[in-house]
Image (cartoon, rainbow, N blue to C red):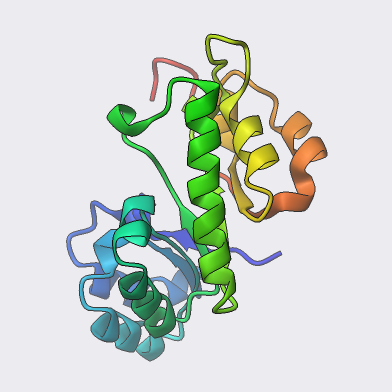
Length: 192
């Protein structure tokens, strides 16, 4: 097992470059990138190298991938990323029907095939909304995984629980698709 720090969880740290110098003393030598650290990839990569840190995975917004794939590949190459995960959809952009999730799955699959041409793995990082049943009773996460057969899955266990589902059930059914697991504390509602 390889452990990485998801940098998005540290997004409130004002100086993301200075943060890198503190991580090795905590035993952290791998990070997962997100948009907030991609502003100047060469500078960020130099800071990672200076601190002995690698970035094996990173988040890329699906719209960014579709609008300028080459720009995302430049970031991927510069940072040394080998696994890309689309992390989220704003509520206004989320499908509300099975057909809508099938369309989303096709978009994800197309992105996966494009990254695969460059030797990069691509997947989806779930949140809770993918586990709430649609009006017809179907579960969005199941639609995504059963339609987009070329994507991988970053299973965020806490969000599965927030979606009122059992992570162990999903791991048993879709474990072969999981290339990363996001583990974090989850407080009982309404504590956090």
